[in-house]
Structure formats: C-alpha cells, structure tokens
Length: 457
Length: 63
Image 1: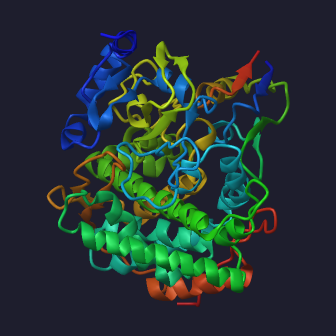
Image 2 (image 1 turned 90 degrees about the horizontal axis):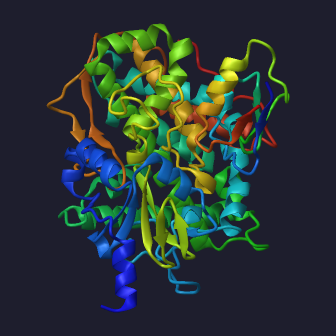
C-alpha cells in the first residue's frame, strides 16, 4: 500500500453505505439517520464514485458555512477546475449551470444582490393579497363538491402562479411550467415516461429563453428584467446563464413549497386535535408551527459541494476535489439540538433548523415559501376545517434524493359556498393588477401592497 | 442585557424578527437582521434569548 492509500484509508475510516436515491432511504429515514448520527456524523460512502456525507447538526453547521473551502461551481464548459455542481451523482448532459446555486462568489453574490430586492421579507409581504386571492380561487373551484386534491388543486397552483408573477411572466401560462417542474423531480431516471418529461423540460427552457428575448425587447418588471440588467463581474449575463437562473427559480419556487404544504396538511389530517389547536391559536402558533413543519419535512433534503481546498473540518480531513453531501434533513433530526427530533411539536422553541440551508447559499425564496405556505394553510383551516385526507390516494415521491415531495393528496370535507370568481377569471384580474400596479417591481421601487379589486358578487 | 447581530454571519433567515420584531429589524433589501437597539429593554430578555437560540447561523450574541 502506498503512503497515499494509507492516508486515504485513515481519513475515510468512518465508512457507511449511504444512498440517498434508494427507496430504502425514504422508507427507513429515521433509523438510517440515527445510525449515522451515532456512528459517524461525517461519513465516507462508496456510492456514486465515493463521497462524504455530513448528517450531524454540529458537523453540518461547521462545514456548510465554509464557502472558503467549499465550492458549488458546476464547470459545464471546463473553464475552471472541472467541478460538477450540487448534485451527487452529477446531472448528466447538463449544458448550463443550475443558476447561482451552482456558482461561487463573487459571481454568486452579484446574482443574489440583483434578486434580493424582489424576494426580501418586505418585498414578499406586498404579494400577500395576491396569494390570498389565488388560494381563495383554488379552493372555490372545489368547495361546492366536498372533495379536493390538495396537491393538484391548491399547492401546485399558488406557488407556481406567484413565481410567474414575480418573474414577470403571464400568469395564465402556469400549467406550461407546473407539470415539468414537478415531473422532472419525481420521475425516476429509468422511467419509460422520462423522455416525455425531458421533452417538456426542454420546451419549458425554450419558453423561458423566448421570454428573455421578449422582455429585452419590451421591458416589464420582474425577476427576468432584474437578471437582464444585472451586473455580474462587471458584465450583463448571457442568455444561457439567465435561463439557468430562471430554471433555478422555478425549480426552487414550485416543488418545494408544494411539498411542505402537502406534508403539513397530511399531518394535520392525521392529528385533528393539533389542527384545531393551530386553527384556534394561529396568532401564537402559526410561526413556530411553520418552522416545525419546515424542520420535520425538509422539502430540499440536502446539497452537494466540492472541497475546493484541503482542510480539517468537524474532525475530518478533506482533500481538494472530494465530493460532499450536506444533509439538511438529517441535521434537522439531531437529538443534540432538537429534543425528540422525530416528533412534531407545533410550539417548538430553539428551532434552528437548516431547511433553507446555511451560509451564503441560504434559500433566496425562503420568505416567499413561508408566506405562501402560511396563507394556503390558513385558507384551508378556515374553509375546510374538518377535512379528511384519503391515505389510499396519497402519493409520496418514491425517493427523497432531490425533494421530499408529494404527487397527490386527495381529501374530503363538508362542502361550502364559493366566495368569488373562478380561477381563470381570478388569473385575469390578478394579471391586470400585475400590469397596472407593476407589482413585480423590486421593493426599492415599489413599497405598497398589491390591491386586488374584485367585481361585486 | 446587550445584543449584537454579527453582519458577517447573518444570512437573512428572519427567525429573530419573527420572534421579536421590536428587538430585531430586517433590511428591506435582503432581510438581513440588525438589533433595533444595543440594549434589550427590561422584560424582553426572554424573547431576545429565544431569538439567539433559534438563529440557524448563530449570529446573535447576548451579553
């Protein structure tokens, strides 16, 4: 054995088989997490060409914020160090980077500086009336029937339409983006349906590319306009880079909030006492309950990184070029930080969960996710307080490698009256509000909340 | 009790202001937090401590 091999086997002494894409990981998540925490909160696994996996909260905390020795870069054109981004295994045949989540500073910082004024808490709060109208109209479509699919009929629609509105895209186009955004995540790579899903994703990218050209020609406010005019390392980004960033915003904005909402509604159906408590005590419970659902269900369960400089972190010595999986989901179940981690406590305190990541790549849509989730949840609690989910019809993603999501969540409830116009009509009303009030301007240019006028019933 | 938010560590998770909006203010532009005043008003220590405990980046120090 060479000195190099000896060194490697010593460094990688804490080994554990770990395959986050296997259905087994979803089915035995709590046991696997517990085992990793106890035996090796930083472990080496041989899967996917070999990589590190960090699962302990303290370890994740120490490692994830070290942007000085970690890289998110996806060097698709081989211009830098050949790093392969945030997916393990790396995405095959990717032609452009996954937006600023696959970049390092200073570039990454420039993108975020351009987009933050659209996504800050103050910026997002302006959209609350729009989200309330969308939730109202989505529930109205089903309220008289007594049955709903919370994924298809609510949690897919509201985040999708809001994301398009913020981008400056036509709201009525939401179905074009919605299906591929979800299907690209839940369809296994070897599924016979994959070619169709890939085709849809290509069409979505083409549509986005076209939108960039249109908005260049006829400017309208929103995230696309912000990207077109962004200054990245002193220059405007190219169309491929902008398309990558838009893909990231859609990927981040659609499936994750849907996943959180569906899981939380499912839990509350199984725990009607907790649901009633949350409905009654929303003033004090809604915030901590939202953070607890985020912790427990961690919609985006982790991120890959590349070690960019040899370093010693959390008791492990890492070498340049090695790959590392940072598990937000497992860090969120560490009993050293979260007492009774596998239990949902709606009033949990000290909940410093990692569901939006840690460090410079903190989810840029976190404020939007929270607001959209809370407004959808309240709408359901107010209008369908006694809903019952049908476990036989609930479809969870078979694996949780990318997103811990749900595809369907059917439920029944006591029917009630509609409160306003149909979803299609509402989309038209909201589109007019977006256009006339320029709702998608950054908060630095527009401070007021959206005003949604509705025709009298 | 004094409070400080380390601007190098804060990443704008907003949990502090969610717990104690009178003690922490968020930048309109990026949601990063700063203390409204260095000194915590009497009777508000518990919420300040809870804000510090729940900060994912551990950016808040109390003294």
